[in-house]
Image (cartoon, rainbow, N blue to C red):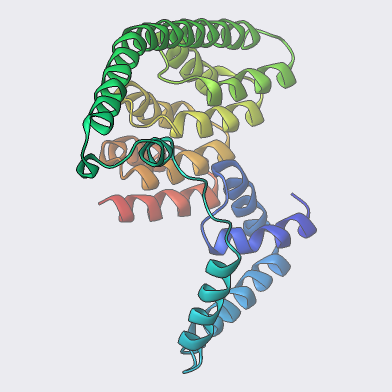
Length: 273
């Protein structure tokens, strides 16, 4: 990551709005760039000063202006056309007006409405049910096509195509065991670290699935890239996954561990303990 990109990402770092991939890349850059670390410290100080600025209270004339705007809106709002029931009532004289004519008119009106409702409801409901069934069938077929395309592209030798395959998971609802297994295999074995980072982000969004959580915990000790190790540690903190404490401590005992990763793991263990 270049310094210019890192400085543009600092606001997102401060508000915790960066993706897992971007945050890991920025953390790695900050560990090596004293200028950007100084910029981060200055931004944090400015952020604290902005938080201390009091929010101005609304002025006494605010209520008056609000009601004036409301009156203007109501005056310019177009009048809604009368409903079908209002039109029917205007065509039929009131029941209390006396005579056989009004009563006969009401009787015929009620008879017509009853016949119409009796005819329309069964046909309308059956048409709605058939339409909904077609929509559900199409949705299932579309999901199956996306899953097949994703599984196929994950075997592609091109890293770009494998990245595209992982992006398809956003359009897949509840993933079946094949999809989860394929994503976890990619997370642990893909030769391209960018593909693994994007896969981690996709899996983190499905962490409500117990299979995904278990796979993420098991992946901790299988990662050798510092970027992946830092990104996985961030995911464990966000998920508050205490089962990760044991593999995190195992990682700390590994020989030749990166200093940045060591610091990150120690911090993660403290936050989860």
